[in-house]
Length: 102
Image 1: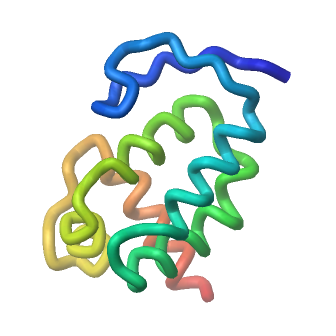
Image 2 (image 1 turned 120 degrees about the horizontal axis):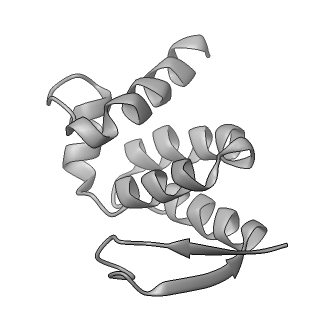
Image 3 (image 1 turned 135 degrees about the vertical axis):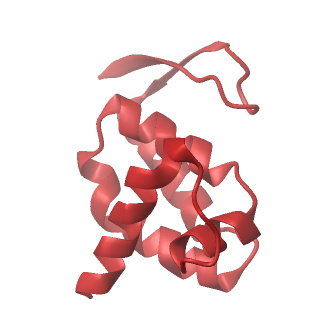
């Protein structure tokens, strides 16, 4: 099943990007597991393994946008050292909730 995503983050910068859904999810899982720090690899990779399969198009876009943020910022948001940007508040809350249940 092919889909069109209009990705507006710095990587694609408003280009129409066509890729099948499983390839997008596979790419995001890889990026989640290959961050700049092992802590973020574990936090984001484990979350992506479980939650990514059920993500909507908009959730995929937001997760990809999050992955383009600084590792220090992402880690700070997850461990409550920094206040997350408004756009990421629900996603960060879901990541924290996922790890709290483990």
